[in-house]
Length: 112
Length: 112
Image (tube, rainbow over all chains, first blue to last red; front, side, top):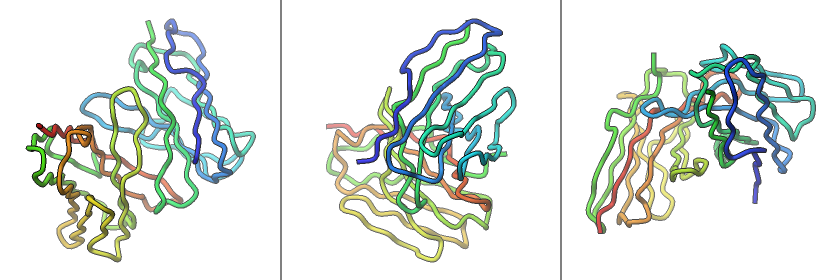
């Protein structure tokens, strides 16, 4: 079974803090994704990566950056957290799209 | 502008009956479509996918229909069970790499 592990289930941070969300997958998948889920808006793509050190902006990259130094790890960075970044963050990985994306359990981030 | 739309935020169905979840898209270049199910506090789980060159794909109780000319797809669940109660997301693969875009979701309630 594919396992996608997100480092924290719940996180509370202060406005202006630098926040790191970590994601690790164990199936040697090429593609990794970061989404955020907000009520009524569904899942919105922040960034994705199709290879080590390669990244592409998604639909809402502003205020975020990513890092993929190793194939199994994809990190999402909030350079200076703001209250509108309070959300559920979901990491996913995939090999072939027709097989689906495999998601982690999510990190509920609250920025106060 | 949302490229993947799910116009019904919620749906209630009696146990044993058919559930039909609908999805519309705007980008004719999408080449793969996926459906996901999500329970609260968990990551989405992959249900079924369909290539744009097909019009139907079936897996057990789940069938996805694609109407390319109408840019419309639907997920049929037969028979519906209480455990199917969840939020269902429609998703599509974009034109670059394996970028996957999600709709806002439909909350399905199956009433015993």
